[in-house]
Image 1 (cartoon, rainbow, N blue to C red):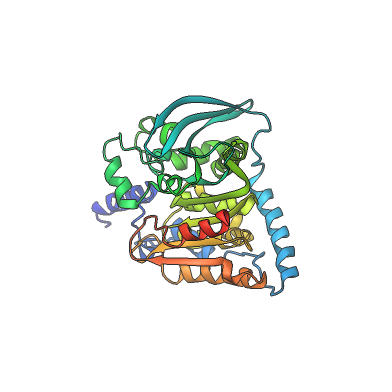
Image 2 (image 1 turned 120 degrees about the horizontal axis):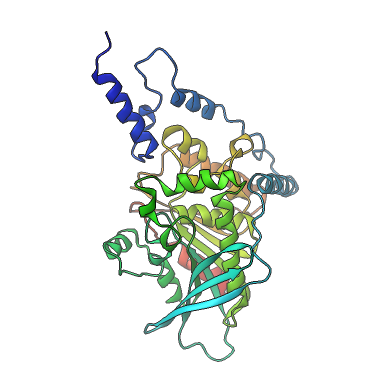
Length: 375
């Protein structure tokens, strides 16, 4: 006779999985006390056999450019339209003065798309007519949204969170003389009412709801990040063709995405995001905001990241970051290296492995951005 405690244990296990418990290890998936194979086992087996049919296997510049064009086209087919609106307006909601910069709270509005909140940080003391480089700074998961990137500490626990992750890299960039745009993405910060989800994951719910409309959160966020690039290019303080992009965690993932798609970004810093989708979906989970449906039929995040080549890019990973999985991160690095080497641009690919956890470093990124954008 089956123990009455067994159904309850199974229920608790499934509840944890449904809640997206990030701490679940690879071995916890696929275990069952039934002879029937459960869905976790089926999916893990399918992930191990992911086709990745469009991986780059060439070795020359021409082969690499042809592959990039092909994979870029396939990525567009999978994601859909991410072009920002051609006509838009700016609503200024507030402005705060600091000793060495000004922070403006802006709302980008256009017909047919949701409005996009953006912080704009501008260094003080710029001579009239002086133009400087700009950086698009992208936030990660969490209720703070883009508040964290610009160092806003008003919410309870915000200061500790910012300090722990070295999260205010938007402020760090503006203090180095860059104009900074820090948009808020969905479903985070002021763009989501988390309480209305009653403990459910807003990323998962938003993904499912947008799928019903034929939309994707990741595509909408790429559109809004590109919209912020338009904002930077419209600013009189920003010099032409001198825009970089930097982000941590989900911000690192979206830095990779927008840099791969939008060639206006000349240099990128991807922090805490050296994960492959194949690894995440086999051993843990990946939130709905990071999903490109059908991607593993053709490639992985490594192939998307390779679209940044030959432009300079630094990939930051803390040695104590529990979200970066050994062996898998080497697979990611090696795929990137192959593309950069084929493009004769190996010196433009940088890896910053620093002492620390899931946090922003800047150790390699800051001097690299200065070299690329200020020279």
